[in-house]
Image (cartoon, rainbow, N blue to C red; front, side, top):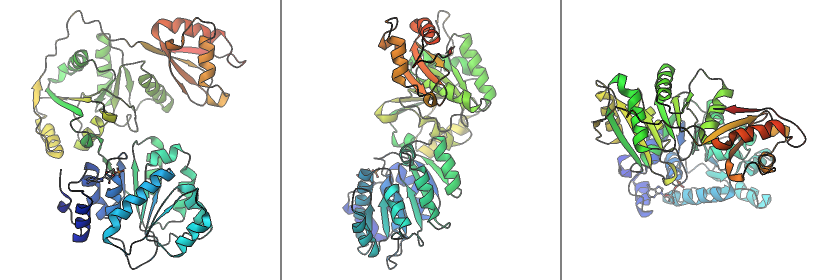
Length: 458
Ligand code: AMP
């Protein structure tokens, strides 16, 4: 952990950080502040609690013109509570520049009072999209001199339906600006938005470094042709509930899946050859427990957000160390311990050296027994997925489906798992032992007066 003095920050800011009790940088601060000070656009995967507020605030506070009473930084937050918290943190950090004014602007407060405060000008505005947009439209908030725009908890903001407001707000900001996006997850819509509103953004993921210690990293020296069996043995030994096996190519994915199948281990594959529809299906089946193993390439796994992933296995070490950090960051979330295993081929030591260098570690590649016992029974999940050809747009609710399945008493509530509704299709996880009955019920009975076709995905 590096101290803040490692960065090129002004003395008064460093003293203020000392007063606040911030001595060493959190990983998100260590990785993003240098980029922010250079004026780069940054897309960072970081959660609340990671120190992200201080990261972006330090970035803009140091370069702000205190003499110009114009809004130079705007931070958009999904909720009033977060907005208030962020404004408070920025005020504490800005205490070393007493003339810098920070305003918190959210709904639930009379508009007139906010317009009055704005008329006295502020340097930094923090707020929620709805109210900010209203004030922009009324002309009481002006962004002509905005230098930095921050989207905080961007994924939540989009989940809450703020996407159009955010786009409209950006329409009021100058094209020449720094745009920062902090998000706990990177689903496709965040990437899409980032592509639209950011210039050559640097992508930072800190989960992995942040949770160091919570993720158990191990490296195993493995001959190329033994890697399939190595994967099988690691899963056999550690028994993770859910595992993603990362490969560098889709051919490797295919090979791994074939080998898993030979040993009767159920897996699903996610690679670039799949259409979006098929990708969705695979992700749903993996996350509802219908397969314990997902074999994936990096591109296909982008935006993948499965909480509580127990293990990540690198069948291939990635070419970039950044990718390694992305991959293993998917495990060990929310305080749960995660396993991150990597297979190192002879001659690949240099890749491990680079990982060690970048993460400040000194892992070595251990030997691994790759013989799978003859009597290994394989691995079959308890759940399977059924689908019916009706979804959200057909006004079918999860309750309707659960009701139909349990109404006759043939199935109990505990036989039914996660229900995922898309627009025109719904996936239902059911216990394998009950899947025959469930399929019969869904094909036979009406749901809300309509009959549907049901299919088994196994
Ligand atoms: P945030 O992720 O921005 O919500 O910050 C989480 C908490 O960590 C806040 O209460 C900050 O005051 C605190 N914090 C941020 N940076 C540091 C640091 N470098 N050292 C100690 N505490 C910090």
